[in-house]
Structure formats: structure tokens, C-alpha cells
Image 1 (tube, rainbow over the protein chains, first blue to last red):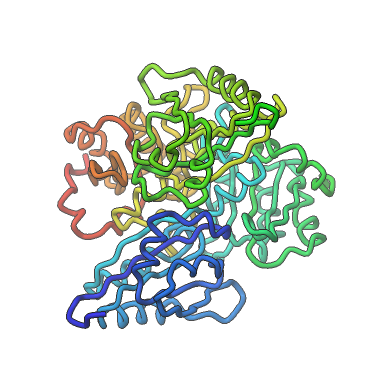
Image 2: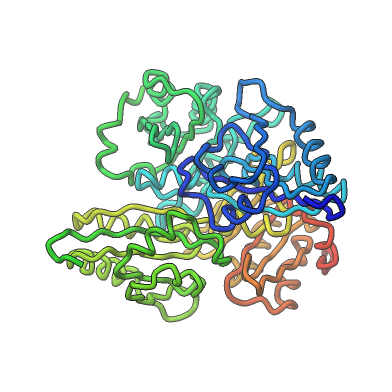
Length: 253
Length: 253
């Protein structure tokens, strides 16, 4: 460190879990970092690329005590002002439900240089582990990535989402799954509409259940899912590699 | 190669353009490949990771002659049956408008082992180069990735997409941009709704224009955009790094 050189912050996406899903650019940023501020969801193996950095954990896992966003923003600004090269390492992609935009704004307001190294987002990569493409020509014109963790006043417009016909990928939807399923059925999705829930995607501990929409919440509960979970709703889930059929549990109610 | 060993195919995402946005897993797949089947949109620098592989170009760029998908599928199957290790290298992510699902199905039907190494998708990474997050807490509950290249009968439901309130990211939307903009305005988006078009995202040749929706097509034409182009529509585009404001051209009609 040279205190006379202005510091800088790089927001880096660590990908969905598999440490090999880090980009070459992320590796280079980690190698050059003085300090790494890291989320709970990042695989510890990723940190081997930052052998000379001081590692600071600022966990942000749903339902557990975590560092408030304002404090993280403040910490980034203070450390950068001391001239350090900082990597802010996040699970997935920093700009997809990762609050990367909020951190960039805080840094920009403080006059600190910042950039982004994108990461593989779980909403696309995790279904791919099962052979499920989130888009498929002739079947869907696109995919919606949405958060299941939102305040009531910011509830997604499920009616519009269903009408859009897009594949729906819900991040952090586990806690509110019964309510999400009910909203989707009220919006017109059939009880038999195919769906998929995946826990710990791309990690050695990955598990999944396929079920018709109306049975999804029960299937997920029966499987004892907890922690990071991704929900995929749409015809594309039928394209899963055949051995997934053994995981189909429950019937349309 | 050993002809007695069954071959296998790995669909690999090369990311949006910057060769450093390749994952470690993609590099390993390329290093081990006997043959690489590659799209036009993949940066040539990516192929340095496959020094011992035979490289076959099967271009699939909009509006140019390219290898029909059926022929690519057939070629993958034939080569795999000869026992080769094949990497099918695609721009972006194989499962996002990349026809990865179609190739996986063809391989599965032929009894050939296949897997997917996800890539960074341009719809998320390219806005990030400008400081634009596709999701932003308090502003949007998610993002829709949609294709602008579709047959008439498969036109996206623009009404539903607008009503969803999601950030809209349109891949391959350049050729039909005036029509897409008209559809969005008919669906209720204001002429002044903020939008962004980016060409050659994450490459040294990247260029962008920010404009209110009604002026976007004109601005893109004035800038002479051609080739791979990404359209981002939504309030999040206002979060772009301040120096983007100098690129704002045109007024709401």
C-alpha cells in the first residue's frame, strides 16, 4: 500500500458456488487485492486466489445477522481512502440482487474509483447443471430473474409475469415459497405447471426437487431445503436431463 | 484421442467478449479439448486456451450465412461418436438465447454424454461496464432477458413486460429496434422512459448511446451501430456512471 495513491474498489462476482466458475478477471482482481470484503455465500476456496489480502467477512445471508448495507458502504469508502486496493467479493453477480448498484453509488458519491467484474449468476447457471436452458427457441422468448425477498409494497406483479410467458427464476424465494406459489396460481398458472427447486446449486451439496407447481412447496419442505435455494418455473424445466424424473415428487393438487 | 473411449461434448460459454471473462472451468475444458466448434461471436483470444485442439468455425451471426442448427447438432454427434472430446464454444452463456438446450437435446437423443459450463451473459455484464445494475433494491424487483429476434407469432407480450415493471434487456434487438420501441410505447412506456443501447459490449470497441425511449432508434442509427448490440430499458439506466450523461442524445418526442 502507498497511502499517497488513491485506493480503488472492484466489485467482483464469485459465481454460484463452484469455485471453478470464477472468471480469469476475478482471479486477477483477487491476486492484486490488499483487502477482500466477502459475503457468506462465497465459497471459501475462492479466496486461495487472494493469498496476500486481508479478508473481512461482512455476511449478508437472509435471516441471519449480517452487516447492514450502510456499514458496508461506509467501510468500503474508508478503506479505499486509505489507499488500499479493495475487492468486494459477492456470490453470483454483483448486479443481480447483489446490491452492487448501491455500493457503486456510495463509492461514486465519495469520489472513489470503482469498477465491476461480473460473475456467473445462479439463476442461469444452476438450472444448466440439470440440462435446463432458461430460454429455448419455440418455447419461450426469454427469462425473468426475480427476487422472492421483497417488502409487501414491492411484491412482483405476478399477473404480469405469468402473462409474459417467460421462464420465471426466483432468487431467495424459499421463505415465501407457499405465498409465491399461491400468487402464481391466482395469476392463472395451472396446478400442473412444471417447476423445480434447487439448493446449493453448482456445489458438491447440490440437491433438487422437480414438482408440479401446486406440490412444489410441499416437496421442498419434505426435502428439508434450507439456505440458498433457486426456484425455476416454466416449460423449460421439462427439458431437464432424464434422470431428473426420479426426483419428481408430489402430484398436482 | 482413443476411438474406443466414448467422446463427450461440453457446451462452454465464452462470455460477452472480453477474453478475461472466461471462467476457470471453461479454460480447463478448452485445454482438454480435441476439437472446438466455435461461433462467430467468440473472441479469437479465447482460443489460446485450446492450443492442441482443431478449431471448427460454425458461425451463427444474425443476417449472415451460417451453419444451420441441424447441421451443427449432427456434426457434434458424429464427432463425439468418433471418441473426441469436444468443446462447443458459444458467445455469452449457452443457455441464454444460445441454442444450448437444442444441442443438449440432440446429444441426449443420440446417447452422447454432454454437460454445460456456463458463461457470463452479456445482458447483465454489459450494462455493468457502465455502472448500470440490472436490478436495484427499491427500484425494480427483477430483470427480463428477452430476444428481439423472433418470428411474428412468437412476439414477446410487450404489454405484460411493461406491466411487470422489470428492467427489460433485449438481446439481438438492433434490426427490429423501431418496432420494439413502438410496441413498448403502445404498451404504455413513456416517450421519456430511459434507455440505453450498447454495441460490442466488454470489447475494446464498445460504444453506447443513452436516450429517452422515443429517441433510441434514431440515436442508434445516428451512431451507426451494427453487429452485436444490447438494449437496456428501465430506470436503472439512470444509475450509469456520470460520464455517460455526455452520451445522452436526442429528446423525447
